[in-house]
Every structure is written in C-alpha cells, then in structure tokens.
Image (cartoon, rainbow, N blue to C red; front, side, top):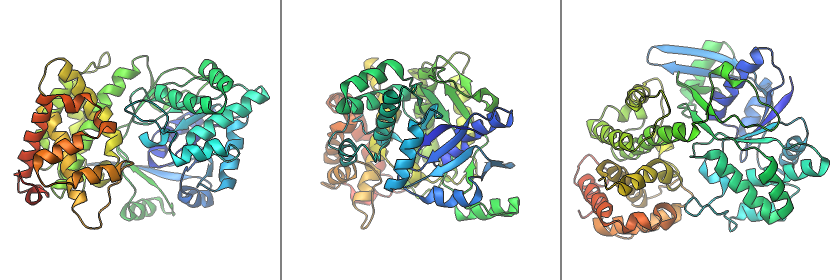
Length: 465
C-alpha cells in the first residue's frame, strides 16, 4: 500500500469518517491511497495505535443496531509536538509520494481571526513557526514549508483538503495558508495561490469521545484489545468539491458525494445540525443533562430546538433534491440515539469559534430581511448563561480560545442587562453590527431573563433578572 495521504489532526472523527471511506477505496483494490496520520499536539494516538500496526475498530451504534469493523487505512501514525516527529512529518509532506494533505484541527487550528479573516500573527505558535521553519508545529507552518520544499525541488504541490466544520472550509484553509506564506516569501505565496487546490467539503457524522465502557464492550466483541477504538453513529455523509492537484481516491465507494453545491450543503449542516447541537449543549449543561440523548428528553430543550429549526429553514437555501424538513426529522432521530453517549460538555467547548458560523450567520440573514429571531436569541442567551455558570463555579474552566475574555465579561455583574451588554460587546465574536441592533439586543435580554427565571436553569439564583 502506498501512503499518498497525510492527515493532520488525527482523532476520532477522521478515523470514523475520511479514513473509513478511504478503507472502502483500498478494499476495492486501489492501494494507492494509504494514510499517514499525525496528531498535532499529543502523542497519545501514536502510542495507542503503533503497537497494533495502526489497525483500529470502528463501532457504529444505533438504538437497535451495532456493527464493529476493523480499519487498516492508516499506514503510519506520527504524533505529538516533539521536534523529531515534526521533522518526520515535514519530510513526508515534502515528498512527491504525498498527493493530498487533509485536515481536521477545528476552527482554532487555522489561526485566523474569524471576525476579520486575518492571520493571528500575535499567536505564539505562529510566531514560533515563522522563526523556526525547520520544525514547524502548526498546520500552516507544516503546509507552507512542505510546499516550499516541493517548489524548490520541482515537485508538484499536494492538494490541501480541509475536513473541518467550517463554512467554505477550503477557502478558509487557502486564506490561512496564503497569509502565512506571505510572511515567509511573497513569491511562494503567489505560487500557492496559482497552483494549489483547496477543495471545500461538508462532513457529517456524530462521533463522541470513546469511554472506558465503550472500549471494554468493543474489545469483548472483537475478542482482542484495541487501545483506542472509535464510537460513532450509523449515519455518515461527506460532500466534496472535485478539485485536486494530483488525483484523488474514488471516495464514492465509501458513500461520499462530489458536488458543486458545497456551500448549500455546508450551510444546511452548520445551521441545522451544528447550530442546534451547540444550543442543546448549552441548555443541557444548564439543566444537568450530560448527554445529547438525555437533553432530547427535556421539553424545554426540544421546544427551543424546534423553533430554532423553523427560523433556520426560513432563510436556508438547501441543495437540489434535499427537503430541509426531512433533514431536520432525521437529525431528531440522530440526536435521540441512546447508544451514543455524546457529552454536552464536549459540544459546548470553543463557543467563540462556533457561534459565528452556526448561529450568527443565519441571524444576520434574518436581520437583513427584517425577521425577528427569538429562537436564535434564546441560543445566544443560553451560551451567555453557560459562561456565567462557569464564571461563578469555583475551579471550573471554560474550554475556549477566548476563555479569559469571556469569563471576565460574564463575571463582572449579576445584573441581566449588564451581562448581556458585556458579552455582546465581545467584537471578536459578535462584530459591531449584532450588538448595535437594538431589536435583537432586546430579544437576547428578554430570553436571558426568561432563562434566569426558570428554576431548572443552573444560573437562576445568580442573576438579578
């Protein structure tokens, strides 16, 4: 098997999604598309998978369904921030055998200010990569320096394939890579802009963190030990823009779709699935619901989600042949899957990076059309309550790149109006237009007070509503 793909950000999602679809390609007899996976921060995945020849199990669970398969698409696993590992990774990416570099590193891994679209040059990680090109640690440093090496050697560039939950993820990856390259060499940046493909994709599969109970169950069923199996749902979807520099696998063999309507697929997924997921997570954290399936049993939450889905559909342009109402009904069934212990705490992380795409994008479209948005206002208010709860809980931490700023604003006051104004004032999240909209500010304040009066909400006793 030839390792033609390097994947940056090797985690549960990639192993349950892109790697599984690549496995179908390899099983068809096309052995040109093995994967070298790389953990960007931790060596945990390498240490778990290397002793088992990079094989791992994928367990797909439904309410009355279970299927466990062993995946062999990974040829090698690199991991951690060690210089030696990053040197090996850079060498593999620079080599002509690498034809695709794919990415799942979440929003914060691109080091772009999502409000301005500019590269975060003040980031210590970016500054370190610009100063030390021999051992880059970020995806941007790795990609740019690998492309520089290939350009110098006369090797064609690989395709950069973003698989993160971001609108126009290929365009975002392109903007980040080119911006970093300009800091290195203007001629290199121009070459990347002209020669490198950055296809957009839409990815869709719920993949919670693997628990010890999951591991024990899967290993018992397998009759062997897998140090880090993956747990996921039956549903899987991958829509890809067909733009590749050096060829690609026929991922349709695994169920993928190549389409020229990526933006519509992305928009429907980010708003209907991810927006409701985030809303459910904040409300779940406020009402003691540990998992998504638990949260879906609470009418307070499901009523808000139903209203949120209605608001989204009113401004949604769905892909041809797709009924958004059917899509939402399918989402409800997926969220209610009791076999997936998808933790609301996991989904509630990194809100500052997620809110702009998942909730503020449809909000701005509704404002432009003169439409009220009480459900989106409730979702934003729930995020605010979640921040207040964290700020007032001794020892609690907020998993977010902007945690210090958010907690400072959330903990300044116990007055509802002051809290709303303080948090809406975070321009990196809300920009200038949303806080300036008096009608929406009033909607958020009203919903914030409504949640504060609800005794089922954890922060009800902490806010003067």
